[in-house]
Image (cartoon, rainbow, N blue to C red):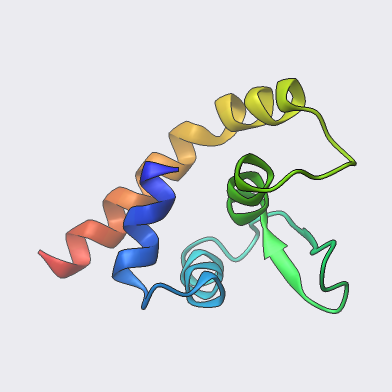
Length: 87
């Protein structure tokens, strides 16, 4: 959540802008439909952030935790890249 918050702060505090930044850096980033807005897609990182912040019936906290563990290293690098562009 903290890493995602850094991206929010660097991208206008908008989830869409964070996803746009992620897609620009990692064009092949996995994406899925948002459950609350099926016509919109969110990146895996935004989905995981939302699963932590909002109860989603299609997953469990254990599944979310495991998926975060599987993706955190790549996400750390992405946040490092974002920070290096403003410093």
